[in-house]
Length: 500
Length: 118
Image 1: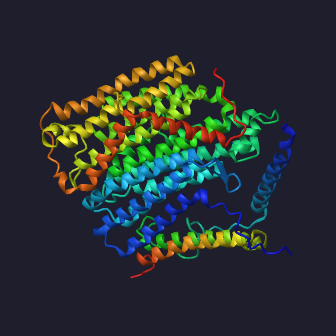
Image 2: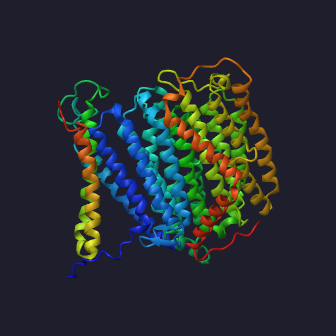
């Protein structure tokens, strides 16, 4: 009979410390919420933000750490994981901050809302850390199930119910594709861990047809999660119906986490198959940008417009992935996601500012004449719209600039031309919001902002980030590039993808 | 290459043979005395009352959900208990964390009144 092993020394808990903090914190908020009245849920929001910031500080300490693996290679620690941890925690904290007054106004039950937000963040961090397809899948499910519930959180609003049901049905369907792809890849390579899978790519015995089928199914699964055309149909309805802070979190957090896993699997580990999958991504990127922008042109509801805008931005990021052959592409994608996070969180905060219980005011017509009544709100919205349109010197401009130059490095001339044309098209609908606010008259009278300090704080942080990341891009692009390189450091067999 | 899949083909054939054989033999040899009660959709001995689309108390769902959680817990704990010696202290602590997380869920459900039947 074997001796009972009392040792705990081999347990590498340091790399998952931020995850532990978020998980325990979420459970704590859930239990604390039982004692707190729903009216006093603002305190829980502050507690949530404090816990998320604490986890972010821990991630920051891990940021400079050497790339390493934990749990026998199931989790990767290091710059890449820490970069996305920070991004996701920031998005979650900003979502909580813009929800504090919104939740009280809309009568959302408190504790569950914040606990689900933290559980979703936990899943996103797990997706970013996963060096194993099953861990990525678990993270995806943890995130998705929490977000399905959050999307339907306004139980008495039919639109919210519709959003949750559509997101759930299509999300569950796409998870099936992803899991089936994982099964195929396991069948072809004999592993679910990314490094052995990469090593198996160069073995002649590997069944290529089985492998490519698996990779294709993974592409479909991730395509649903990032709302890439033709897997985007759920996005506008889900974005429109979900409570607005949740929509912001879906547009920023879910997208960042999905790209974290997508980029790690494809650009870091499936490099040798680059010629095959970049061909598919080329088409997907072109379609996603074009369909997203053209559909956004005709929207009259600002949340739907921002949903199609989010689809279009996923297309720009896919251009970066198609340019995997260029060494700069990885850093450009990570930088883009950072600037996009600040800008989009800010834009949705303005939408939250105009909403009141029973008076949703999310039509473009409601923004008419906003500049005269609320110059601060209108100026902030103008800043975010200009950044989304890619006007220098804001964050959105340099994001596009770095991605497009990486695409040119990879000799993707035609895709870059399509992307630039799309940027021009997108300026039309972003600027139409400005025209409504500054030129037109009418619209609605939002309640005084002075009573909503948390909302003002969210707006100021988002605006400051949008300007700072654009004005001084160098430190951010350096950390983004460094973070991507550290993911390569986790993959000793890395091959540079040759251009087609 | 294809030959490696041969055992699966044999399994499929055996499965079809066994199931098909059982159904056929039953059909050929079994006595058939149909009655009104046997022809009902849900043959459970009791005559059905009302429609299946009636409303149920939400408590059934809550209890079912709680049951699934602890059902799954037991499924995970059996293999853990068998391998406890091999897993050592690390496995013990991990199982305690697992049970602890589920306990948080139970405490939450309890405090929120999911176990009250009034």
